[in-house]
Each structure stands twice: as structure tokens, then as C-alpha cells.
Length: 164
Image (cartoon, rainbow, N blue to C red; front, side, top):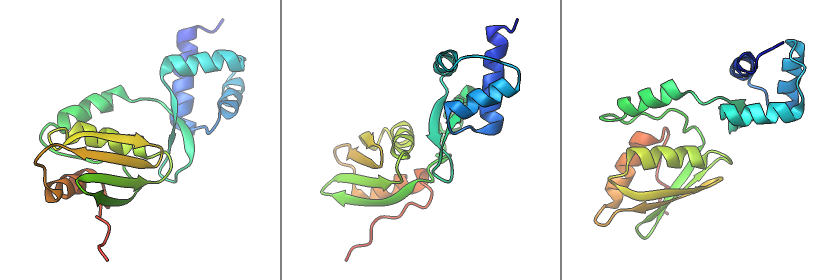
């Protein structure tokens, strides 16, 4: 009999190595490996492992496992230096008075907003994301130039919308 612990380890390995785009594909991979589980069991396992669908570098949604070691290492690394891991979905940025609006490819806004909230909390009260749009709320006294400077460090390919 296959233990739950072993099954969960295999699911993590399959997600990491095959990046399935659906539960059906992941279920087939499990069956091919000799794990005859049901869709319901797989759904529970995915939830327990905190596996979620995220966009890859091409914008396709695939299942990914959270890498806690990397997350905690990044937090230490970011203490004095801003690094930008997965913000490839950036499209544009513009101001409306003191508020900023970032447009992203669908599904990328949450990741970028999370990076902004984590790395620029001294500049922004918050970055609020919804699928492909982020509303940036700067703190009192923060200049537009300061906003642009910090976003340039956080978002690869960042460029403020050209004025016409």
C-alpha cells in the first residue's frame, strides 16, 4: 500500500518536473507512475501541498509548488537589495495625480503587487492588484520621481508611459 506521505512527495516531484496545466494531466501522470487515485483525492492533495496554478514565462497557466526555501532566502536577500524574480508580465505604468496604475498581462498583477508591497513598504501604503491592474497608493510626501526610481528597481523592463 502506498502511503500518503509518499504520494504527496510524488505529486510535488511531478509538478516540479512536468509543470502540468490541468489536474487531469497530473492525474494521468500519477496513474502512469502507478498511483491509482481519484480526482477528489488529488484535489485534496493539491490543496494540502499549497500547489496552485500560476502563469509561466509564456503566460500559460501551470501547476507550481511553493518553494519555501527560496521565499525565505529571498526575504533575507531583499533586506538591503531589491531583486525582481518573476515580474515578466509588466506592460505599462502611468500616474493619476499621486496614484499610480500598472497594467500587466493577465494573471501577473498579484505577483508584481506582492513584490512592491514587500520591497517598497516605505514608499507605498499599498499596491492593490486585480488580475491585470495594480493600483499604487504612495505614502504622504513621496514624489513621483521616488515612485519611478523604486519601481525601476523592482520591475524588469519598467518604463513610465511616455507623455504626449
